[in-house]
Length: 493
Ligand code: 0DY
Ligand code: CA
Ligand code: ZN
Ligand code: ZN
Image 1 (cartoon, rainbow, N blue to C red):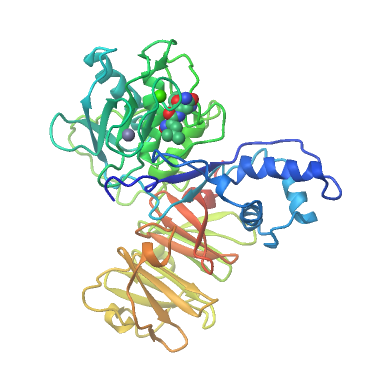
Image 2: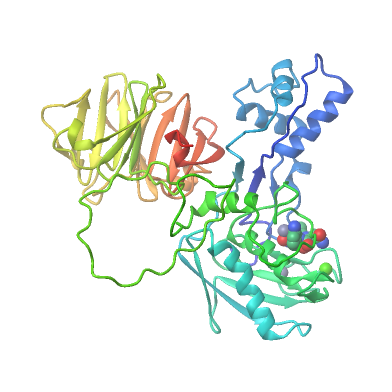
C-alpha cells in the first residue's frame, strides 16, 4: 500500500437541505440540467485525500449516478429521468435526518485504535516551531473534542500521521504546485502513508487572515487523515476550497462533526443536558475522572437507547418486529407503531442472560440466539426443547467460541454468521454449513468493513452494524447504500 496514490480514499456525500423545489410535468432541457445539478449536489461521490484523486463524478456517467439516486430512494433502476424520479428530485429535502451519506472505497478506512500518534518531521521557516506545534495540536483537538480518539505527539520513529512542509516534489508522486492552488494534502487512514499530511512549503503560512492560515488548512487536512472526504456543504471545513474564517474559539462545524462522529462515534460529554438547549450543542471532552472509592455499582443499569454512541450486541426481526439486544436487555421496535419497549432478556426467555447474535428463520417460525459457545432455538416466548446446544452442533469448528452476528437472507435461503473478520454461510434447507467458508468479510461483502456486531434484515436491505454506526446494504449487489447511526431505530427525540 505504501506510496500508492488515490487509494485509501474515502468518499462522503453530504446531503444538505434543499427546500421548496416544485415538481414539473415532463422532462425538458431545463429539467435535465436541474437533474444534473441535483445529482452532483447529492449523489456525486467526491473522493479526495490521496493527492491525485479528483472529483469522481466526472468519471461517472449521468445514468450511473441516476441509478444510484434511484436505488437510494427505492425507485426502479431505469437510469432515465422518468416521472417518479423527477418527482423524488422535486421533493423538499429539509428535515432529512440521515444527513451524511457515505460511499466507501474498499475497507472504509478509519483508525482502529483510540490513540493516534503524530510527528512533525519538517517545519516551515515562516513560523516558529512552537507556533506550528501548538497550531497542529489545536487543529487535532477539534476532532478529539468530539470523537473518542486521542492524539499523541511523538518525536522519533514512525507515527500514524507524519506531518511535513515541503515544496514541489516530495516523494509521493503528487508534487506541490508552488504558491496557491493546492495548499496541502493528506492520505486517509491506513498503514504506510495512511494519515500522512503534507503542507506546501511555497504557501505563505500564517496564523492570521493573510496568506494560508495553518490552523484552518491543518484542520481540513486532518479531516481527510481521519477518513472524511470533501463535503458539499459550503460552511463545512471539508468544503473543497479554502476560505478564511475567524479562528478564535473555532469549533468543528456541524457537518464535519456529524461526518466524523458517524465514523468514530461520539465522545461522551461529562454532563449532557437531556433536552437540547440549542440545535447541535457541541459535545465537550469528558474530564479525566478522579480516582474515587468505588460505590457499589448498579447491578445492571438499563442501557441508554438514545445514546448516539449506541452499540448493539445483536439485532433481528421476529415476526415483523425488530429486536435489538444489549447487555442483557432488549428493545422491541413494533412494526405496528406501538413504539419501543425495553425488557430484560431473562424475563421473556428464561435461562438466557445475554444475546451475542440472533436471527429469524421465518420459514420455520424459529429464532436462533447465540451466546458464547452455545445457541438456543426459540419460538415465541418459549425456548425449544433440547437447547442450549454447543456451537459445534451448528457446524462450527472448535476454534469458534462466539458468534458476533447472524442474519437469514431469504433471497438465498442462507444464514450468514459473522465471526471476527470472517463469515460462514449456513444452508437452512439442508441444515448444514456451505462448503468453502469461512470467507473474509471485507473481500466478499465489500463496503461492510472488517467486522460486524449485529445485523438484521428490514424491507429487503441488510442493516450491518459495527460500533455506533450501521450500513444499509444491498446484498445482491454487494453495495453499501448509506451509513446511519444505530440509535436511529430507537425513536428518539
Ligand atoms: N487537500 O486536502 C485538498 O483538498 C487540496 C486539493 C486536493 C485535490 C489535493 C487543496 O489543497 N485544496 C485547496 C485547499 O486549500 C483548494 C484551495 O482553495 N486552494 N484545501 C484546503 C482547505 C483548507 C481550509 C479547505 C477549506 C478550509 N475549506
Ligand atoms: Ca500550492
Ligand atoms: Zn505529499
Ligand atoms: Zn481537501
